[in-house]
Length: 212
Image 1 (cartoon, rainbow, N blue to C red):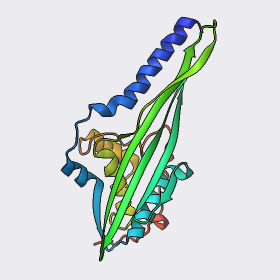
Image 2 (cartoon, rainbow, N blue to C red):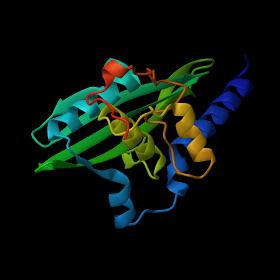
Image 3 (cartoon, rainbow, N blue to C red):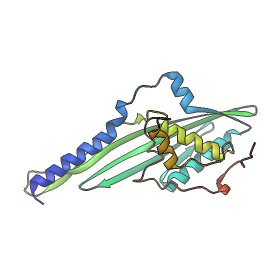
Image 4 (cartoon, rainbow, N blue to C red):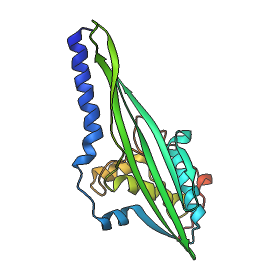
């Protein structure tokens, strides 16, 4: 492969990678009320620790031990480093989740927030002929805008906590985006590059679903 074709591939891959990493900037800004409505849920008859256990189960089903989880009294954090390899380049980043829950009598108020940092690495020409080094660019962690990622998160939490009959698959989640029911990216839980997305069984529920 000659020098021109290598540079051409680098440019194409660079455009694709940075288009993916920058696409969230084009989404509309959410108001405080929209954020609160999107990121919080009230669970009646559910304990605080049930929420944290369900959230960890959700992350393990999504991508197993790739999630690094830590717990505090009223919160938990989960981070997932990831890499996507392409021809002559790679995209890398970290998805960071924060889940909080506080109980008040027989009800628990839960909230979640997810952000992502990402960057790219690709071969760069050096001063020596036919010699290349690896260059990279990184991005600061920014909130994942939109309702799509939270839509699938809460649907799966509802299933694990016995509030929903059916598990929301990534196919269903993607269809809801296409139908404009929700908007934004759901790649932190649903993508074909680096998410295992294991289908749960009834034994994975923390609270049994009761038909009403």
